[in-house]
Amino acid sequence: MVVPIILLIVGFVVLILGADWLVEGATSVGIRAKLSPLIIGLTIVAFGTSLPELIINIFSCFRGSSGLAIGNIIGSNIMNILLILGVASMIYPIDVSRISIRRDIPVGFLATAALFVFANFTGSGLTISWIEGLVLLLFAGGYLFLTMKKNESPSSEVEAVQIPMPWGKTILFLVFGIAGLYLGGELVSRNAQIIAKAWGMSEAMIGLTVVAMATSLPELITSIVAATKKNAGIAIGNVLGSNILNIFVVLGISSLITPLQFDAKLNITLGILFFANALMLLFVYTGKGRKLSRFEGFLMLLAFVGFMVYTILSR
Image (cartoon, rainbow, N blue to C red):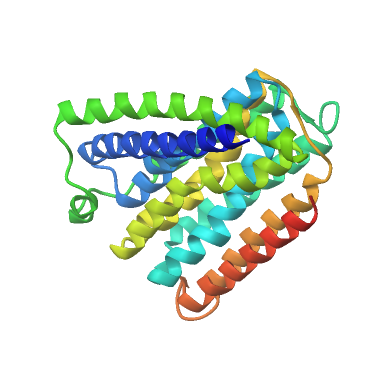
């Protein structure tokens, strides 16, 4: 078991490096296109940090491991809210924009509800089919259209995010990023499956814990850096956008490859994801202004610890 564990760790490192390079290149393109920090966070950065989930899911689906694919997304989304927003807001309180409250948080609830309905009540039941996957992708298209339509006017705030790289360097980052994602995804998917069987864990369980934790690292790093730079637009936009794209795009594409078999036990975890979204919304409206305070971030972190304890004990 030593070799698969080492290869799994190497795969995660390569995967995260690849995602980081791709995000750097794509963000440079976004700045040249004069997109606002919030839009960069909700689209380019969010999609880039969702790439590890997408790549792992694609490889897993081709290997018939749909349980790992679904567990990965649900676990990542819970961690994005409770762990990543919790840590980021403990570093520096996060102001939440009006547009995020009116559009992105409700769409996050919609995405979770759509996953619950498609997995339990439509089609053949406990399966997300390719037709439902197409619907999820249509939802993604509608969300991205609304997001780009509401793009803020260019301002000096855009320049504060990052100075665009030269085109040659940008292209190199994009190419090496894609290569890193492919190699890392192959290593993680193959060895996670081996470890799950050896440890007697279900694929959904290892997706909820080990794989979800690792694929959430890009979001964690991105949001921590944004919080230390006091750039709330990137920090909150990254998490909200990534969660929405994880369900609409990543699961949508995954279900086009193979029908996703849904373990009914995951409904409890979906309930925890609903709770995480509701807790985030509650904290936004409590206290002073539309803000996640350091204390509220600490409470979210405690909730994440509770989630991990429950998940490990229930395996």
